[in-house]
Amino acid sequence: MDKLDLILEQLQEINSIFSAVRNRVDETDAKMDSVSMDLHKVLGYVTALQDGQERHERLLERLALRSIEQETLLENYQKYKP
Image 1 (tube, rainbow, N blue to C red):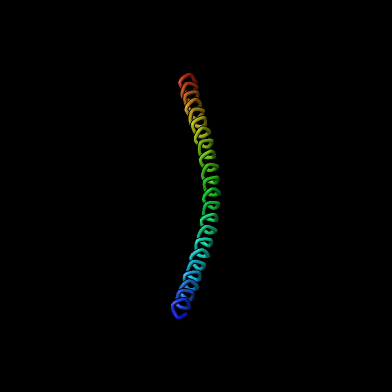
Image 2: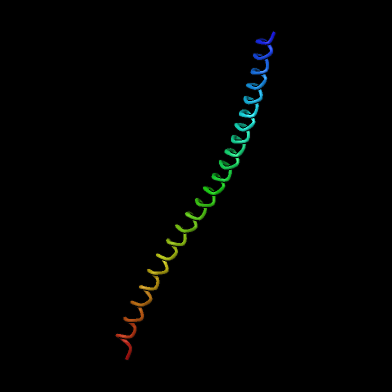
């Protein structure tokens, strides 16, 4: 019976270790899910920022063109001004 008791004791220890490992894996999975959700949220913010930046760049281009047009009009006006 000594051998059987030893085997049962080792089996109990293995089960305890396995249970601890499984708990760690579950914790790690939960943390990875949380990180994944945070990453998707950040990616959403980055996409929104990129869209806003593109709109601002287009607006700046239009404003720059208007400014050039107005400067040209002023130069032409000053040329023909008596």
